[in-house]
Image (cartoon, rainbow, N blue to C red; front, side):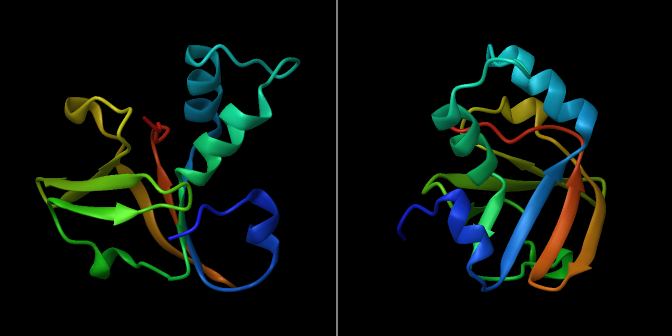
Length: 123
C-alpha cells in the first residue's frame, strides 16, 4: 500500500477513521513535544494517518480480535478485545493501554468513524 497524504483524504473513496477525543489528542500532542503554536508537520501528518484506514469502511462488526489493520501511513494498528469491548493500538502505544472504542459506527458520506479515548501512535 502506498502512503497516503492528507490531501488524499479529500480525493474521494472510502475511509475508516479512528478519531480521538479532543482531550486525548491534546494530551498526545503534549507528550510528542508538539504545541498549538509549534508543530512539526511530518510528525502531525504521521500521527493523523495512523488513524485512517485507506480505501474501505470498517464497521465494528468487521473488527476481529487479535488482528492487525493496515493504516494510511503504512503502519499497522492492532485490534484487541476485552469484556466485549474493542481496543486499538498503533506500534507506539503500550499494549496494556490501547485506546478503547467508545462510540462505534458513525456513518459518514465517505466511510465510517469510530471515536476512541486515546491517540494511536506510530512507531
